[in-house]
Amino acid sequence: MDGKLVSSWYNLHSSVPQSYVQPPERQPCNAVHVLSTNQKVPVIDLGGHDRDDIIRNIIKASEEYGFFQVVNHGVAKELMDDTYKIFKEFHAMLANEKVRESSKDPNGSCKLYTSCGGNINDVAKYWKDSLEHRCPPSGEFTWYWPEKPDGYREIVGRYTQELRALALRILDLISEGLELNPNYFTGELSDSPVVISHHYPPCPEPSLTLGAPQHKDPNILTILFQQPEITALQILKDGAWIPIEPIPNAFVVNMGFML
Image 1: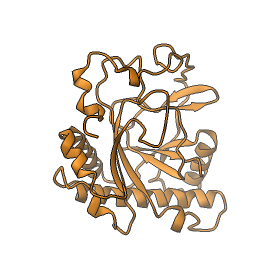
Image 2 (image 1 turned 45 degrees about the vertical axis):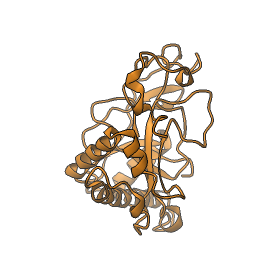
Image 3 (image 1 turned 180 degrees about the vertical axis):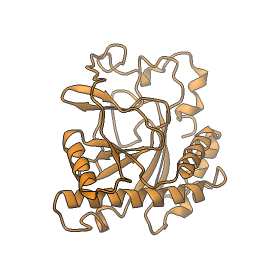
Image 4 (image 1 turned 120 degrees about the vertical axis):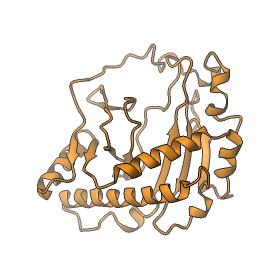
């Protein structure tokens, strides 16, 4: 695996390997995209005092965009910064160290992979490495998480606990807005969360390849922490691609396909 990671060989090439070159119609240099800079994904202040207004805004954004950003969400900036730093440190480690730290569970509850993983076949690979592991509230899989960089388990453990609480809070607001029973989304629908950190190494020919395909998340809810100051995420609405500008200390919330 270590030799397959994009981060282990990207700096040895002056061009994109053929297996990563997208078909002409998908290449950024050729693709015909209608980009909308006039539309903005809604930003919702979870710290507001009018619960009904927050619910209305979430339901409206979910219906119209399937996405929104949240601010004043209760997750400490220091924890967000520490988590971003620890993920960055992990992906900067030597390839054999990363493989060793993410291969402790023979059942694959923690795994490191390149492109979209081994279960998805596509005409070309995607320019990214990903670390993924389960993080249920029981903590039963923590033993298989990376121990390096130092502090990984402690920092990511606190982060995933905070993000799960935030997800349940948002789902509670959604269930109220949809007039469902309280705690509709608790239990089996939300007790198996997963955390994924994507790493996109520098690319010598970014006009030929992509970091991810067009897709829909298959789960109920995704909470995304974007790298500050880099606008890469785009969503499709009414035939136009809308960039989601990173907001300091905000999270992007994505309605998954199940929801």
